[in-house]
Each structure stands twice: as structure tokens, then as C-alpha cells.
Length: 145
Image 1 (tube, helix red, strand yellow):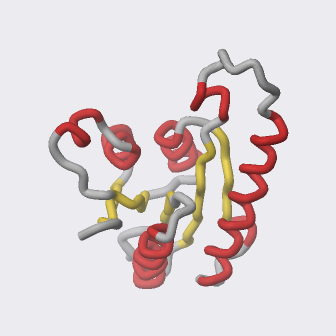
Image 2 (cartoon, one colour; image 1 turned 180 degrees about the vertical axis):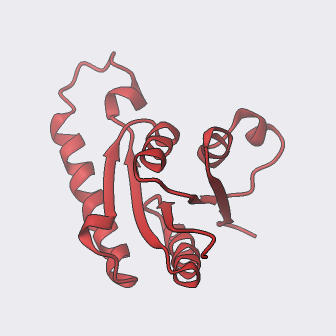
Image 3 (tube, one colour; image 1 turned 90 degrees about the horizontal axis):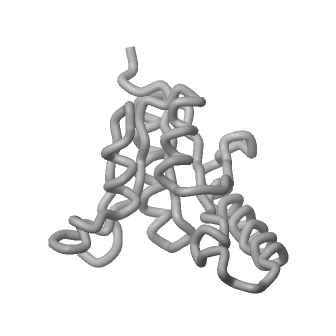
């Protein structure tokens, strides 16, 4: 029996996403597991507060279109089907936990910059994902080494 059946890889839209995605793909191939990729967009009203006297709809739509295009590019590199590419809205850790439970995921793969000291205490997305997950989490070290 394979250890993992369904892997959820959470990516940002930086070059680091390639490293994280490659690691997730390798693990999925080794386990003959399904691979689903997700990018979470924080709504601008959440990220910048509701005090902004602007209509952010157009900007939010542009961000979404760019994210979908980038996710599609990443997916093409590893032959990931359209139904396994997700762009969702909300707080990254909450949406990743929700998707992991909904889709019966048994491994979440995320990138981590390996912060320590004050940055670690204050938390990061990968730390938040780790602490709330009901399945295994693999943090792939990215960025400066």
C-alpha cells in the first residue's frame, strides 16, 4: 500500500513555487498518488482592511486572472489536469485546511523560508498550516540557503 493517496501542494506565485511543485510531484509519482495544486488569494478587503474608500473589484479580478494564468503555467510543466488546479479566496491556512479535509488529502506540501527567531514566533503561513493540519505536512525549504 502506498503511504500517500492524495497530495495537496500549496504554491505562491514566485519562482519558489517551482521547487515546491517539483518536490510534490516527485512524492506523488513515488506513491502513485493524486496531486492537487492550490493557490490562495487573500481578498484585498481582508489584506488591506475595509477602510479603503475604493472599489477593489476590478483589481481583485485582475489578481485572480493573473493567478489563474500562473497556476496554469506551473501545471503545464508537470502535466497537471485542469480539475487539479485550484485558485481559491480566503486566509491561506484556513482554505488549505478546508481543502485538505474536503478532498481527503493525506499530505500537504508547502514552501518554507526557514525563518527563525522573531519571524518564527510571529508565525508564517507554513507554520500556521502545520499547526492546524489533520494530515502530514511537508515544508520544502525555499529561498536563500
